[in-house]
Image 1 (cartoon, one colour):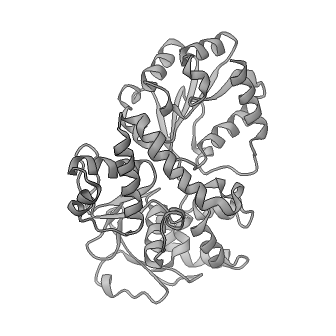
Image 2 (tube, rainbow, N blue to C red):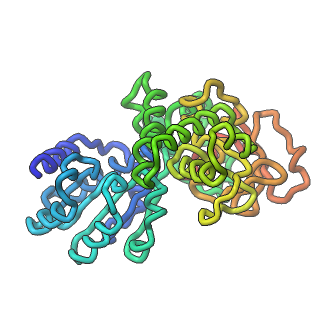
Image 3 (tube, helix red, strand yellow):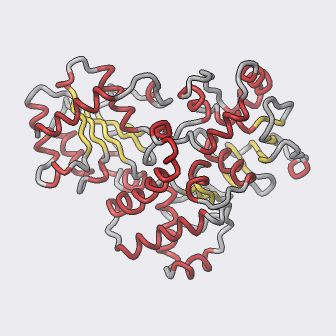
Length: 396
């Protein structure tokens, strides 16, 4: 057990406090049971380590452990929690919770058996936390951490600290906001850099190996996280890998699912499960004209990679139009419901219609539609209902 405490103190000492993700200030750390969901690599571990370093002068009151540690091969979470509690511990922070067998029951028991113990847990696999939420749903508060927005990237780089704006304010005041930003910042070259590498905070630590690191993230989601959720065979893992790479080369993909299933030598049911697992693992985005119903999986109407950085890491050729649409959906869907639109590209909040394109894009396709807007790339400042694409990265 001493090794766990040594690892904990090393992690706390090394964590940096010069930048905080948007979610940090939104979490009510006083709640007894907190879940933080998010894709691999978006910064969940750093978030909780920063909280411990800031709010626990006496580090013995808190304990951080990653549940994929080999110590848990022969020891239980219950034993660790009891030792921590009986030695004066008040807060337990559990990382990679999906790597612990029957984690939901284990956490439920801790919650019930230690009424004044505060528990925070994270899970890289969004699928597992959603799938097994039932027994904990009445007890826990759930937060979701997205990857870095363009606004956060600018702050992380020390370039600009732009206040977050909601989408309605953006639509109304985009000209004045853009003018104030671009007075001192050449925004378009920075936007291009962000699209290539800036969504995952670890980009600063990887230098020229960022693309390879993203490929490794995808591999870990498929080979480590998904088997932790379901008892799947190695042959299925190979099919999921193949599915991801096929779709990465075809996005945006309007699925002919029967052809894809034949190519993967799988059934419709298994194919849909693999597809939605890739979405919840933070690797794909599945769009439809109607809201998703995860209890009744259906064929999506369009498929994208989850964010522009993944496009550069997994695709041999990055199409500019697809890159723009991927960015728009990725950033806006973190704060608003986004559906495919029968006219234009995206329907936001059920009433705002958006067409995404380059600087010469016209209103022809949506000219007669109410509450319609253009999200335009390659411009610093917009006009009227033409809004610079980069500004949709200011929403969180």
